[in-house]
Image (cartoon, rainbow, N blue to C red; front, side):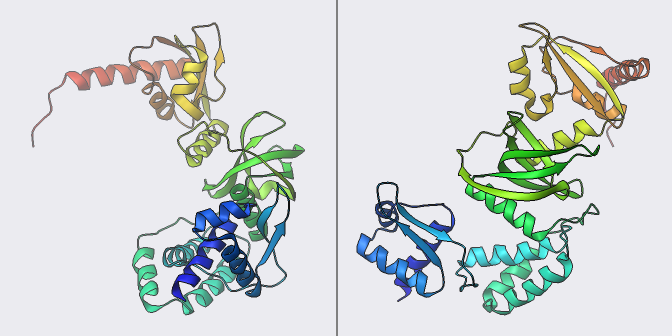
Length: 325
């Protein structure tokens, strides 16, 4: 019985991570016959899961949303992750998050075995999220976006930019990121043919197209870095530009999302805009330029004077011997 339960759980896990599975491929993954697979599919249906089956060369099995909540089957690691995630979600600026999430957490932890509750309490002590003070977002919309990211489904939505400009967008969602006290969707914008970030609290009229896409490579180490670069480029009190003796493609490859706005001056030279809330932040960008690359800086007299002074201070500090304590 334990083996059968584990197999059905493995089947459910596969159905939850793919839109449609051909029967032979599912049977091969589970190392069972197609006849056994059909019996396991029926067991899931008896538990309340709506598993749709289609015939033909393009047919297979996929999990559909039902009208009632079926029993949820989790592995131990998934259950612990879920409980910790619910604790974190209560602090992440969801509409009615503190009430709804904590009540869900209480119900969920009530049915956890004692050993798993101890794991949750032990791990939760090392999870200290910050509480965003941005505009709360709808839990329903956040869930829809998360599913679209998981299922690689194109979506449509209405968006209001910071300046009040409204537009309808069609995007391929990649990741949801909580940053700068707000939720951001990182996605490929089909109209702009480029990667973009959108504040979730400024989105409305969400629509899932049921059109699926192949994953694209994000031009950053991860989505969080991409969001940080995008937000930094918007909030700038000061600005300057750097002319680099590097081709544009080399600049983009080296700086990743931080190369946003860079333009080619020639086949070998690139203009790279930099900015920040302070001259110190702008100066730090210059330190990332490869040592063997020549460059010139254009900016305000105040910023250029700051760079000269900082350069002299660094040179003196490098020549000064360290005082041993």
